[in-house]
Image (spheres, rainbow, N blue to C red):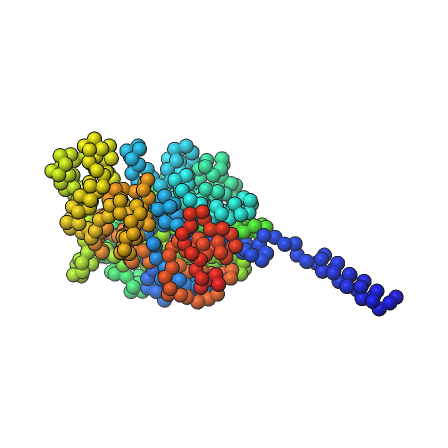
Length: 550
């Protein structure tokens, strides 16, 4: 046999052997990870990471910071900074001006009543839960989510699972094409869903509910994770700026959860760190039960930890309770990360962690320390406004409603009096800035198309949807809160204490490092899209974070 013939057959044999041993290509190779995990923490201030850093475990927040990428200057680019808009904007890559989620509730002029962000009377509860708790869906969300785009890209073969205590925090991240969005029902202690998503719960959810974990978590008092003397980052446990749990006379540890549980059903778990723990438990159950990340297409798991918000509202950011909640949350997050690293490998999972908003310090505490702060009493302002309008126009019914620091006008009444809407808006805005605690006011005409130069005005404009928002938007002074309760805190403003949140990335294609360059919350979804080589959500205005995607 000639040498050239020998070489030919040798090459042919090598080629055939290579073809038979080559791995079959899937959609995961090489352009996508097996799994995307989004973690949203409800009401997390950016400075909590540095404040509690020394007490965090090595495998939770510290691991994300040391081995991941830290966007240290991430802010919300709109207001109001609430739970519904926050979760929607993270996953849609756009602001309420386009995704339509202008608040947790808003006034509907056609029906002359409030609507809740995920209300849907056309659907029913699925699972062993109360009837009203399951009448929810994402139909009020006007734009697609990154999960929707992932599902469309894979011809509906990717799975998108979303989990939270709050219904809105589970439904909005999951989007319209979610394969399973589950939230906690206080009446039953179970996780439920609605007929929008499915006709019956998967077996793994029923098996999870059968463990009755909520009752088990509430069967013993809440004591601090560490000796209470070590909580030096917080104020004294007994102070006048914290709210009271049911049946308690002082806001101090230990908190007698078994007594509260018998009086308030399972809902009390929401206001304890164990609300986060049960969320972690069902997230791990979802990974196993749905075989997420084990198929040929990239899957997405959206987890929202809601208990931090309930504890924060009640106790404020300087409390031992909020510190203990974050130390325990750190351990819950570590458990999730350990599971992902062990069962998938760090390089096969893309994980991000952020928050839906931050929170203000308690104004009463700031006032006692001789700082400018205050409480804006919305009902009193509204009464003064109606008196003023009655004097000016002879009609106190020109205002229909006020919510989210916005005033909705009665367009029909204004038309009947042959008044111009713009004139009434201008009049109210001029009156509002004379009222104590209001820094500025913007009319619907300004917010719908004018170029506003100040940053706060731009944030309000980005949160303005002409069909759903009010006619006049109020901006309060710094450190002024809407609620006149001298304990606990809230959020919703244009100020940095509400807008700046953590943003950490970890895993697939993520190099360790940090950036102090400005990042908008709407940049998260397009960054994921860029890393996955898919289209961003259909109303996305954000841009990929170059430091991560380059």
